Length: 153
Image 1 (cartoon, rainbow, N blue to C red):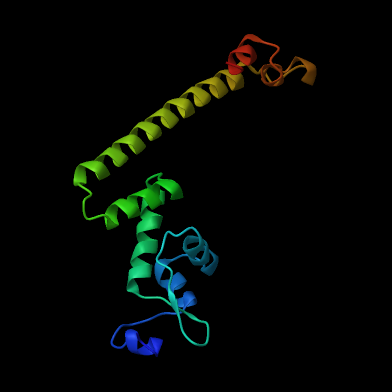
Image 2 (image 1 turned 135 degrees about the vertical axis):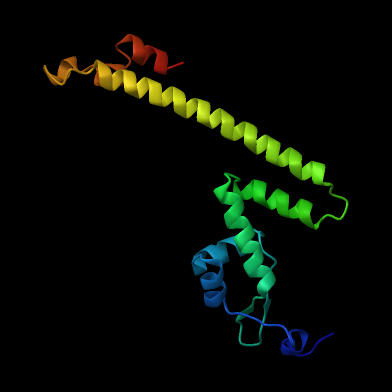
């Protein structure tokens, strides 16, 4: 067993949390949160209590941020990371995860397009004249007109 943690990291560049956050372009709370969620390996600690981070931590945080940019949730990212560590995982399993995310994103796009069309219709139906009680946008949100009744579906 290594008596001095510094010996374990002899020849390896280590970082404190602030430097990790800076290099990964996140804040320190994000690093702590990822650690709490088991998205990054739990870092060892020095006798002083400081965490010992390595380039692996920085690379993993960058991986997480890129996956988030593609729409993956932290739960999905954790699954991807677990698959990455499993030597029995095949590329086809990762492809299935990506295909599922693609389907999810496609459904969201359809929903957003429907919302855009509905909002466009509501905006076009408003003449901007008349009392607020006759506002077609408010009537729709209150479910009092045809568009509003369709929104409840």
